[in-house]
Length: 195
Ligand code: GAR
Image (tube, rainbow, N blue to C red; front, side, top):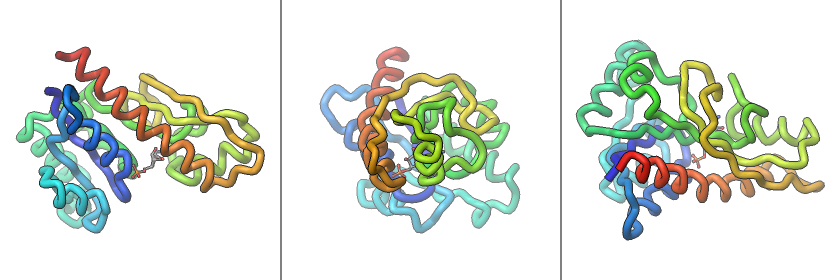
């Protein structure tokens, strides 16, 4: 089974969807590690409850970005992680992590990349931008992670309609529901391809 690490900052609903999918019979992957830069995240509470190995790694635990980067590589290596998934992880990955896990790091973004990606485009800011641009369609993208935000090759996208009376909140909820289906699907596909 493909061993997956999930990096998450806050709620972790995508992590949870992925974990639930990993428990279904025949799932080709398992969650081997959860890392959060936020010690109070719901994701870490859920990991504790579910007895999933988890770590808090942040500027509170490591003084410099270099040390943090090295600590993350150490954790990923110690747990024999095959695939890293950043799901609502509000931090850039460091050069060591990128070098050690190369094309084995994917991210989920709540818009149809290359639209509405890049620096500062997180969560509700993305949905506000979609509404402001008048796009009639949006939806999550999954892409390989590189040193630049939201710039790596796109692996999968799922279209979701933008409705005339949508708010950023209603749109976020519709896109998030699609994320919860798309992410397990893509991870299962990667697991099947690497089996
Ligand atoms: C998700 O909508 C994810 O696509 C988004 O943050 C949310 C995290 O929710 N990520 C970004 O905006 C990255 N640019 P979750 O913590 O409930 O999975």
